[in-house]
Length: 319
Length: 319
Image (cartoon, rainbow over all chains, first blue to last red; front, side):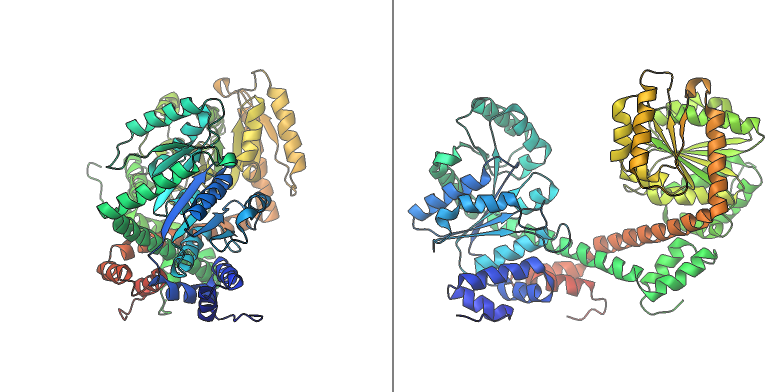
């Protein structure tokens, strides 16, 4: 296939036939947003739902990418397939860190069983928290059974993105402050599984104890987040982590929590889209000719700011 | 006057006749928000504009209230009148700090030339940045020639509130970090006058030099923010500060910047009100029966989240 269509649905069909370049273009389409992304979203929404999605988050440098690569090796050995989305909310374009990670993961890049892609915002800040669920749906609808979403950093956007998956893995490292940090950043609330990566370093047991104590203080449901010790660089603990992820999936399916979590996520997504679309309205209203007209009345003291807003929002054009 | 009307305009007339209790009720009305506040806002908007407003901000404990009291003494000695609004965005109700400050300022509370009032949000977070300009307009329309708005803290809301005045005074203390902090918090951009309060303490000269250097690095207009050294507790430097505030007012009037600043502030206020009113729309839309209907269609995969939002925002009720 030399010429790829630019039509979202045609591209989707090409990707389903196994064209990796088509898939890459679909994800770029999602990153860009706009009408094509919407068409694609509408096309994939009802076809998605079979994949199990795993979010992996933690501070920069905690070794998430190395761990993802180790998990990819496990997945391969089990004759499974997995797509990995590396999301970097801190960088508007694919930055050095993710690029470096991709190089490190290159064992897998030519692998039919593993797909790796980094995502960045091309548009406005925070766009990733809307683009990520759409990208997940594309991969899901294309039949990837496992989708791993790796996010850099520990801010609110990262928590939102990581929380938009079925199973959330929070990665920390040995060191007293790390566990505390996870708590502060709100990761404690979204973690289904904790990983202490680089667990061959000093302080791993202390960190485990700290985490354990925090978990005991939190009021927990039936699922008690396990703590898995890993050394990503040599794959130690990766099989155990994968088994824990599968256990969590089984738990979610058995209890019906998978359905309720997904339903809730859709609600959050709707509310997020609603906010964005109203924000866009504010911007367009503020640039309308009506605004210039009203500004004069405001300057003359004829109307006050609240009346001005009422009139700006009135769509019938009356004064 | 034993019985005060609850009608905003009647209360306003009573306040104009000098009833302090009526004024206090007007400001409570503004704090509560809602229809009465809007009526009052519309009534006072065209009557305001004669007062010069001064914002004073800085970290907690920097001595803003003591300095306000010292300025009040200067104002009195000049046979002038001044209203002081102490705004605390961090506390939903009038907290200990402001209450303590009010006690410290009690020399002035029975004084016809000085009016002191603390403002707190009764309603939603951030409401103060909309309530403060309204409170200022009430005081302005009642004929207070000087209005000092003192805000606690150095966050974005404080910067917004302090920036909503004609002259902004930023208070720091001797100590290396304080000046840096002022820069970080965005106070550098809004400061018309810097005050180093508690300037009898060690390090005052260093702080002055730090500030001076930062000011030189910023690209400045015609007005170069002066640095005034004060000791609020014994009134040292308060007269000099007052003279500097008057100089700034003269500068603003002479250059026409007063008019353009005020016009710009109204724009910011309109945009802020617009945002709030659209946020309220989001909330009500999400609670509509329509949302429940659409949720079912989302669950069945009949529509995707973007289509759901389109339908939620459609007011004609069509599908």
